[in-house]
Amino acid sequence: AEGALAGLGRAIDQQFAAWGLTPTEAEVALFLLKGLGHKQIAGATGRSERTVRQHAVAVYHKAGVGGRAELAAYF
Image (cartoon, rainbow, N blue to C red; front, side, top):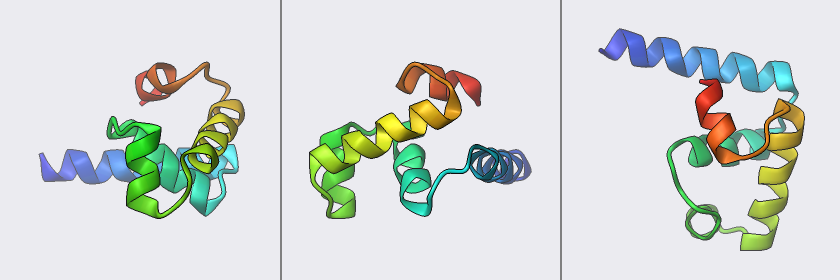
């Protein structure tokens, strides 16, 4: 199980790089994949909810997905 999770982590990192996500966008994307909401991510990262939402929109655009569910389904 640990090997599978490590492999998934590498695959996620590689895909984020291929999409050209900034470090902040990648951080937000990981929280989104974990199921956190914008408000929760804002609290965890010290950013405003509006900023987190903007990063999420940028992630969805760069990934070519319509939202959180499609982002999660990608992986």
